[in-house]
Amino acid sequence: MGDIIHLLPDNIANQIAAGEVIQRPASAVKELLENAVDAGATQIKLLVSDAGKALVQVIDNGKGMSAADAKMAFERHATSKIQNIDDLFRIKTMGFRGEALASIAAVAQVELKTKRAEDELASFVEIENSRVVKQESCSFQTGTSISMKNLFFNVPARRNFLKSNAAEMRHIMDEFIRVAMAFPDIFFSLTSNGQEVFHLEAGSLKQRIVQILGSSYNAKLVSVNEETDYMNIYGFVGKPDTARKTRGDQYFFVNNRFIKSAYLNHAVNTAFDGMIAKDSFPSYVLYIDLDPSQVDINVHPTKQEIKFEDEKIIYAFVQAAVKHALAQFSIAPSLDFTLNADIQNLDAVSKPFTTDKKDAVAGSNLFKSFSQKNQAHFIESSHQAGTELKHWKSFYSAGDDQTKPSDGNTQDPVQQLLHTPKTRSIEVIPDSVLLQLHNTYIIASTNSGFMLVHQQLAHERVLYERYSLAAHGQKMATQQSLFPIALELAPADAALLQDLMPDLLAIGYQLEKTDDNQIVIQGIPADILPGNEKNAIELLIEQFKHFSAEVKFSKREKLVRCMSRQQAIKAGQALTQKEMMVLIEDLFGCSSPNITPTGSPTYLEFKEDYLDRMFGR
Image 1 (cartoon, rainbow, N blue to C red):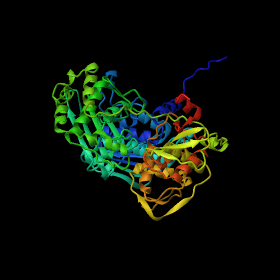
Image 2 (cartoon, rainbow, N blue to C red; image 1 turned 135 degrees about the horizontal axis):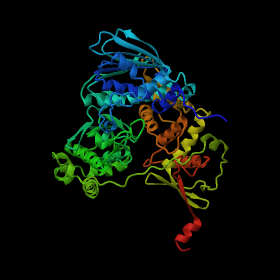
Image 3 (tube, rainbow, N blue to C red; image 1 turned 180 degrees about the vertical axis):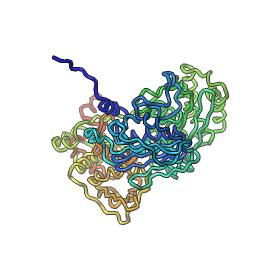
Image 4 (cartoon, helix red, strand yellow; image 1 turned 30 degrees about the vertical axis):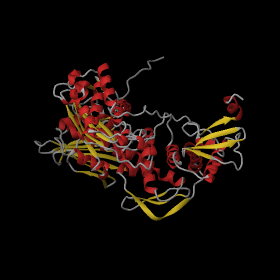
């Protein structure tokens, strides 16, 4: 037998390496935008066609490249940012990955035009399959234009794994927003298929946040700004009335790089303890600046997950800074208390911040260590910090953290609904009086005792099975709206909703896109009371975007679960005898009446012999 181990050709090795860096068009968008920022550009334009599958182009007015650099930039491991290994821990720029342009050139057709201010002519480079096809001089303004065409044209299997245009466009918008949010002093625009989606003039951080998240935030932002010799934190948190039932607008940046951190997110959430409902999430856009040597940004290929040298100090600092901002601005919640009666019992309502409490907050050792110059190095990162955090919590006493149940129902929903025999071992005594307890629980006499039904969870199970059948073939009836309702959505949300339109139609929502790119509600499911269509769609988008589950569900399954959760009658709602009886009848007509889609019980049964034993009979 001959030798069987051989070296891969460069173009194949590059295609394999590209898979780590360029997973979809949005990956290239991130890399190219960050390179434009590092080039010192004050204007950056992103143009995409066919959700980036046909074209991703970034044009900037940065410093440009020489003819030699223009060609060298596409070599593997080429970078202008790193000279030795220690430089990895001093990185202050954005696009420093030495694989990015080489990876793009391995899986797309690339054209580059670039010119420095001191050069008379620009350089033009055309690359395909990692090989330079053409290099010549051309006319171009100072700066760089790089076009990535026909992504994965030479790797059809990878191209087949891309999602719908609407889904890929959402990912592109997410990456665009994250870079644009980090650099408000730079003009950004995003044009899709010839239509401008974002036009973000350079301005203040608050102006950029309002430009992206919507004008509703203009009067609802609280400034956060604390500086020490160890680290700085600045940005904005939303007032309590901007809190949502799902993880809405939450952005963390470390040294201007967008990151995802459940740990720091928890720090912000605890700062809002007692000010928002326990099942709500605050909005924030926060920036942390600290010495790059204190951060490891290479723990994840996308660099969205990072490690801090001392996480506990960062946690305490974030929590203290947000608490101080809320206290300083005397924030008191102005929530819609009709939505949830429990909110009226929150400390923020019954015990608002007093002057004494504000003084006590500002006088704590923890706050002083953050607010006084040259004090950060005195912070204890272990025991003492934990003790001080307890002191902070005493101002906003709240319950234990809520843990969400994991989605335990992993069986195919259609097979489960169509092929599970509908057995009913429990019989509610006919014509018996049903009792409603605390407008939440229904007590019903049965043939063997009684049962306690949770009305919201029971209705969620009923709706889940109804919507599941509709989504998989048994289309629900639609009631036409007398007056079509136009939705005002952020571009990313509009793209998501457009992607969901076929599935929403199956469960009764009729949505249409107008010529001026507005989305209009033409009809709603026949069993939903009209009057709240706009809020229902907006909440549905939020729930879908931030759907949390250990199991990876299909788009349609996520939509069905979100709909059933949203439309279920809520705890605290009074029901008539007829409504309670219909609910129980519908529940026991389900294939799995005893649990919700997420595995919570819908009712508890108390049998007669058990009741007898309780009373010693």
